[in-house]
Length: 189
Ligand code: CUA
Image (cartoon, rainbow, N blue to C red):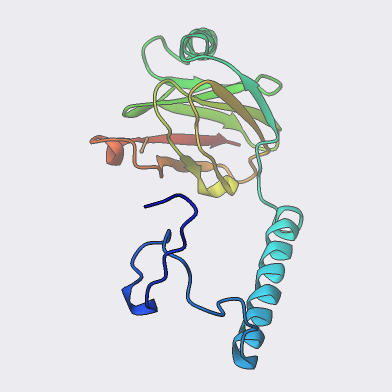
């Protein structure tokens, strides 16, 4: 084909997006289509407004704190955290005193530490990260769900109120052992 040559085909012969468009493709839309366009626009704006206001009104626990890290650095950090506060060595139960930061590192296919103990009525910052792929720990009781991303750590502030035991589980498909990724948050009175 000579460059610049215009190929005209019948509309029914068009079969790729590179083919020239149908004649008069830019004519104004008929009224019902225009109305439908407006409905979609209004609906989109409402959805966008709802999304942003829900951040403020929905009392969501959003992780506003974040830092760059690496899987090695976060591994090191969480290990010294566990060493410092583990109830009994090797138990996996880490009781965090008020005023100290807590950690929860996800990896295929478990959370570390396996059991986190916090005290009711005190504010904690819990740092999340991942040592390998994307995970999504959920603490439903704390209205918190967040993607653990390797290379970053995110901090959420929580003030647990009701003493009890709460399930933490992974809600991002992260491989064959995904369904085994559970851990526990224990809130002590
Ligand atoms: Cu981790 Cu699914």
